[in-house]
Image (cartoon, rainbow, N blue to C red; front, side, top):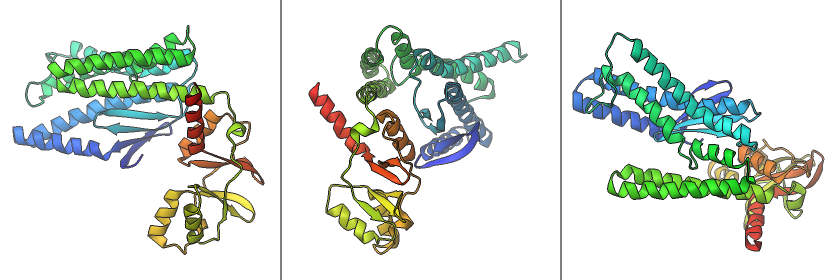
Length: 359
């Protein structure tokens, strides 16, 4: 993900922190020192935040490693100031599998909270539950971390997308209803809850307003995504195949590609090398290449070579996942040495618009 810094890897899943997370740590460190005038206080506060986000990472690994049991890979986990995000290839379509994957994250927080509680209970040190009213102290470090994990588990179990509770609810509803209808019910409930958060926030706490907006938009996005999956599920790549397209040569100058870009509605082009399709040249590569090398650079030097041929019988939903994972908006259809056509994301979007208008 852009503007993210790699910090580690576990079981093939890379962990990143977004640059804004570093700003958060800097702000907390500065604020702690300004209040307490103590480097010890700064390290204590930073240690608490890092421990808190370590719990977030474990929460996301709970989802990721459980999803792996069902053959679903996770590309990476990224930490943001507001939480973490695991980029899984997809969510399980089986209600049982989706339930297990969704509940795995909150269960990790329950386990962490349980271990912290047992340690505090049997420790000779007397701990008092609660959050610090001022600067973080060593005595309140563990009780605060315990409460945060309890809150994380409860908050994520709210039956609203994009929280885990929304996916758990959809999994349960899918046992009785068709998946698209189950998603619609869960999304509507989530938006209803979101409106409640917003109204409460207007009178009590402004943060509830932001949480409500986050839930409302997330619920709508989840419903839209499910409608896309439904509309595309019955189609293969052959149904959306495009047969009118331009093929460039790898030894052509970038200027030729720019003229083709300006002379048509095409934004991406297949590139041939020795009569074989070996790459794709997108508008982004053209602009980056023009800025770095000028218009006389050969296309083969700047094109995307990490492409794959999509067989015509492949479901469109799977093709869309591949294009999203590769971050390439167009891919060739057919087999090496046998080009049948192309499929691109823009064409898929236009098809979805037509389907929506026909409903």
